Image (cartoon, rainbow, N blue to C red; front, side, top):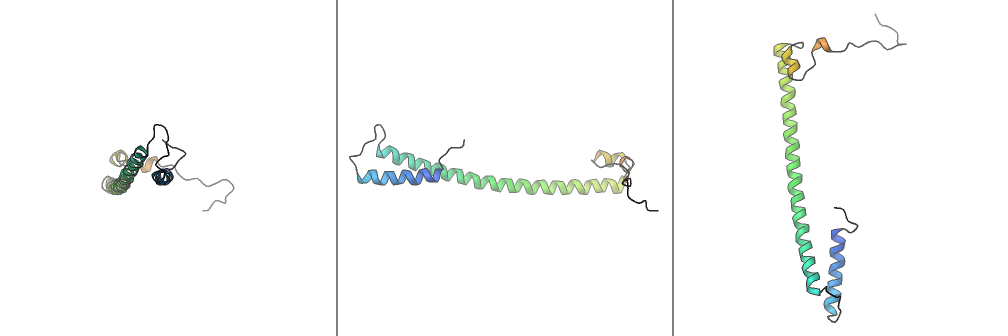
Length: 118
């Protein structure tokens, strides 16, 4: 949920208020006390640290997942090439493995206006 206040800015400003408030104990803010502000700041720092830790874990997992996807894609390419080599480029097995049979490939045609080479 995006907010218009960054966590770091809110912490810095909150800590500044807490320092000034601690120097002026007669200051009051209704139901908000210096102790409740300090507890909220402590809780914010703890949650920020947890979020950063989870971001680090997420980045690591994302990198691992990407590496696994690359490895799997390489295996698929090798297997498809193997089906083509063993069963032929126009085989049903090659098509079932995701390849395009050579008989189904579109033939290239010369562009209009280009001189025909013979």
